[in-house]
Length: 198
Ligand SMILES: NC(=O)c1ccc[n+]([C@@H]2O[C@H](COP(=O)([O-])OP(=O)(O)OC[C@H]3O[C@@H](n4cnc5c(N)ncnc54)[C@H](OP(=O)(O)O)[C@@H]3O)[C@@H](O)[C@H]2O)c1
Figure 1 (cartoon, protein in one colour):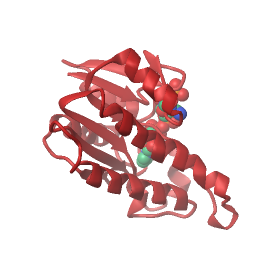
Figure 2 (cartoon, helix red, strand yellow):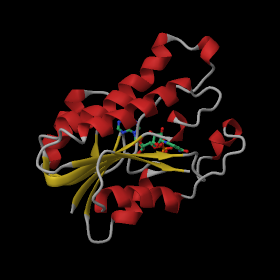
Figure 3 (cartoon, rainbow, N blue to C red):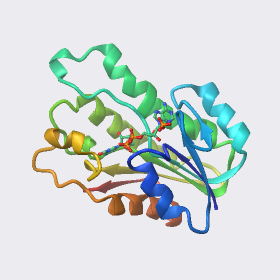
């Protein structure tokens, strides 16, 4: 299977690469690193990537920025960082990528647990995660040629200790469990699902 992984060099992405690299052709993509570069907040950059990489069987996105900070100071411009990057960046990977994906292919996006289990400072991230989960549910009923789509929503992961102070009482999830949720999305048969990894 030819699998494009956007965010392949990141904390989560590198484990997803490891979990899928045996027996598959993995195209690693980052902002500055990887086999190819893309800026998901720029639709021209996304189109260029697909033109270079060509048709594929699965696309996994383990990327997307969003603002994390107190609601009382949150500015429109801060909220929109996540709308442009984590939300529309990943949605545009699907809107554009649907014209390059092979029949029976799959898209797997990354949301997070905060849509259902919010923490202080997470209002923008929670809203964006919820929007991504709703997007995959709706897109699944319209994608053509049996193309599937799911979202993975991890709780804070064990290799991101910088976030632990904001996640009191959460037990960080292991990289193995997170990576296997992506494997389940790509190699399984389900569509329109938001897999929470808690
Ligand atoms: N870490 C967690 O605990 C956690 C928990 C739940 C959900 N998530 C979500 O999981 C996703 C990945 O998180 P992470 O912690 O693995 O991130 P990370 O370690 O910061 O890695 C980000 C990856 O995305 C690439 N990237 C950055 N900006 C990009 C852009 N504009 N266009 C394309 N690629 C870009 C980076 O490439 P370069 O290396 O080239 O810069 C890198 O490969 C995010 O959506 C995050 O909200 C994370």
